[in-house]
Length: 206
Image 1 (cartoon, rainbow, N blue to C red):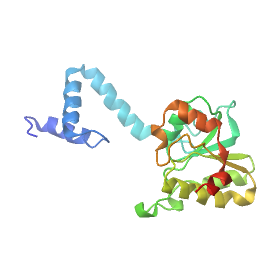
Image 2 (image 1 turned 60 degrees about the vertical axis):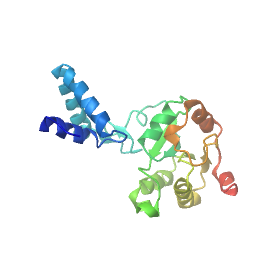
Image 3 (image 1 turned 180 degrees about the horizontal axis):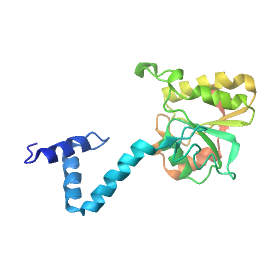
Image 4 (image 1 turned 30 degrees about the vertical axis):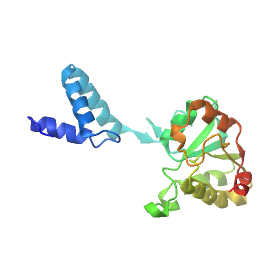
């Protein structure tokens, strides 16, 4: 792709590094921004910089937050004794979109995958186990994607918290095996949360 401007080329190259954005789409986006009022482009750039420099991670659940505690953890109407374990922030957003869950979350930041060099120590599993040890949590809901890595992560956490005698459940398999949670429709995902099953039962089916 030939460019008449080095500035345009640099902008397109940076934009094309975003997931799902190829060079042609990046060019279309950059040209679109050039047609907009300068103030609108500056506002976009300012907000992107602020997100990168000022955003926090909740000290309780590791969700994205504007302060030490996210809005979910600081909401007194949420049931803090029920914790839904998810892989990343997109899964929190997906489950929240169902309006079927009123507990807290714990964001692992990934799943155990030896092939990718990701072990238990690379995730927020230790802080989850500490949370269980404190005695406030009465139920853990495993809501990781139903892949080999997701099931391995579920089982590892289950063995870590087994001595503490709390209820462990997993979302009902309205989610197809192998599917990523974030791509499930809201109705299916909502039903899976409502009709969760004991985690031990899911082990018998694998």
